[in-house]
Length: 407
Image (cartoon, rainbow, N blue to C red):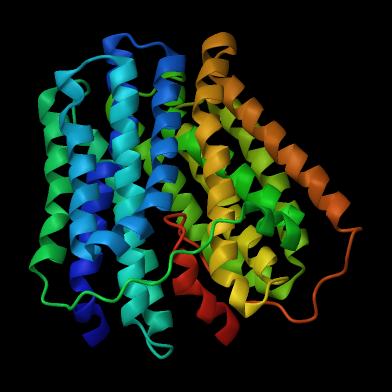
């Protein structure tokens, strides 16, 4: 309980940040449809978000070093709030893309600061409990962000203003907290080639994870509308995806620690491909069937990042953990940047099912690469523990690194 209380301000900021910025993607998609944006233009908004996300990951450690944690958090929160509140002032897809870069940078920057703060305050004795609470808060906030869309009307000031208020409110817990700011840790060097050098399969896995998650979360509302879901059902559709992925983490973690992680990735690739086919097949069978397909898709695809990260860390030294985590996050962002635009363009050209055909092909490619890599080298004798890895910032490796070595 003391641990929860000591980090209450940080965790409350995470929840408010998720509620404010996590809802903008589906709201933008629904608003874009209402305003007559093309599907490619809506997909561009998702790609712009992840481009801003990458900028935020890279810039946040440097800004913290220059002005401190609280001021840097305030700067990123301001960027996110401006990006949200200005939407209905400038109704143009190109302008919205730039605004979404601000919200993407806000998410990455604020998470970087929160994770750096947590890293400085936790000890080896409290790390496991702190990270457990952090994961629950992160998933709970993400789930709540999808559900809040059900009460917001597209393309109106009130909806964006409410999200902006929630984003701005994330400032309050940290700025009024009496917890002393930690010293700034050195920013991890960004060496994307390290991920490929340690495990080509893990590098491919996180790229596919980025492609999959970004396409579904950013373009999923368009798919939902195309298959007949009403606007208020889109929130439950996206929430089913998040909930399915969250529930799958525990059994997948057990499997990934007990068996060859490459076998687990192969199983996930097969399940992801089947889930894409099932989602397409269930599209015309009613709302409940569409929700079930989304939950299965989330369960099959969301754990891929954590399994891939665990596999990469099996081949890394303890001193490499932070930089390896940063490299994996970079590759995830690379996949995520291109994916929404590709998915939305395919939907515009070939219909709603084209998005899942595209995603299934990426998982078939990962399956083939997994089978190829199994012949390249044996399983390492000593392996790190599976850890659910939030895809939040380059600094998340600082929180997870010692936990891997301790287990």
